[in-house]
Image (tube, rainbow, N blue to C red; front, side, top):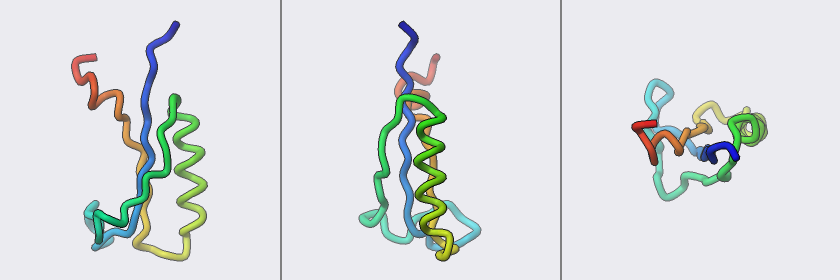
Length: 72
């Protein structure tokens, strides 16, 4: 059995296009948790496409398994 990986997709409106700082942390959307990078990218792409009209909206894939086990 291979090691379980955890990728989290979140997003929201940024306060400024030049920074990665959310305008309102309470409004950050948790899109989901995924076992593979490919699944996470699919969810990320879907959410990003749905908000293409708002230049300040950004979604991110977080490699949570690297945060949980930084020595690996």
